[in-house]
Length: 74
Ligand SMILES: [Zn+2]
Image (tube, rainbow, N blue to C red; front, top):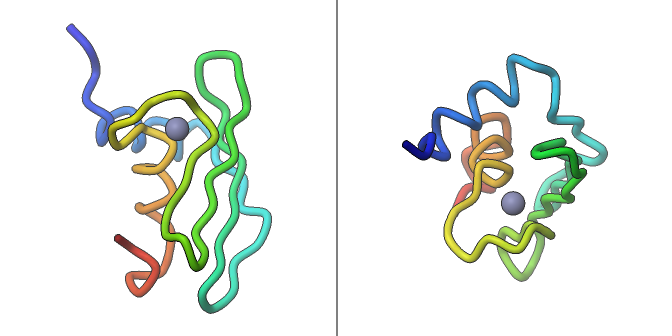
């Protein structure tokens, strides 16, 4: 069974796989390590974006949402 993104996201945080690079009003950027790769999650004028190939809400975005300011959430 596939692990839900929200559960995986919590584990990413606990494992220290989320590294926030930049956090300021209206902009957020973090690196998330998952599946042996590093993905970049950003929030800016275009909304949330992750560099991984998933089209749905991925665990990287979900992990960023757990720590980003409420105003920056989708
Ligand atoms: Zn992703």
